[in-house]
Amino acid sequence: PPGSCQVRRLDGGEAEGPSEGLTEWRDSLPGPPAGLLSTMKSRFSTVDIRAVIAELRHSLLGMRINNIYDVDNKTYLIRLQKPDCKATLLLESGIRIHSTEFEWPKNLMPSSFAMKCRKHLKTRRLVSVKQLGVDRIVDFQFGSDEAAYHLIIELYDRGNIVLTDHEYLILNILRYRTDEADDVKFAVREHYPVDSAKAASPLPSLERLTEIITTAPKGEQIKRVLNPHLPYGATLIEHCLLGAGFSGSAKTDQMEGKDFDRLLVALQKAEE
Image 1 (tube, rainbow, N blue to C red):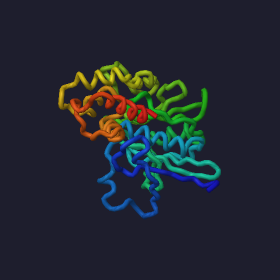
Image 2 (spheres, rainbow, N blue to C red):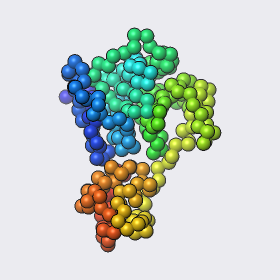
Image 3 (tube, rainbow, N blue to C red):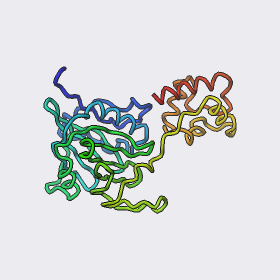
Image 4 (tube, helix red, strand yellow):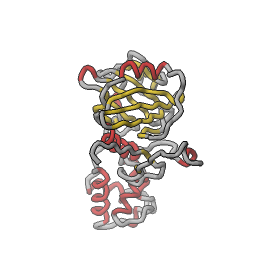
């Protein structure tokens, strides 16, 4: 109804596509159901990230930050609001991001990282949520133009949360580190390397898709053959195979003729 705000979060199940795995979760109980924390997904895949970004764009864009709290040394809550709506965004470094209605316990004394975020982000409007390339990195932008700030969360390896200005100059960082392979230092007053994110590759043409599969070893599973060539991961590739009428464990030597056309159409739907 008009004036209402519907908040969604992840249900912890395996996502089979960009729109799967996100369900309404109304936390009306005094605490999480028994056994829930042990059954939730332990880490987001690229498909999960695409799905949750679409959901957050729909539900949170345009809202302003009311306050920021820390649950522990890697988990933060961002309270957002607009005149007719309130919501809470949970960020867990290296693990997950999603909206939540559960009343998470908060530290009595905010950490220095939370205080720094409050100083720069409080009352700022969330104007964009995007993935950096196809990496498991999400960029939240608060404010516009030279008054903009970015809160970047890394959802791989040990994770990180980074606060930057509009030029991606790091103002505060949860975990200082150095990427020796790319000679990049992640520290205050250094620039966050947004341009180093792996760019999305274009979908293979029909000819290229046919070549990849026909030149692979006979008997190899198609989802494993295609995995290095696509940014989705094996789960979504299997979903595409099922959508095209194949078995999820279809083998390379089972493809012939128009099968490649059907598979390409299914991959194009995944891109959408």
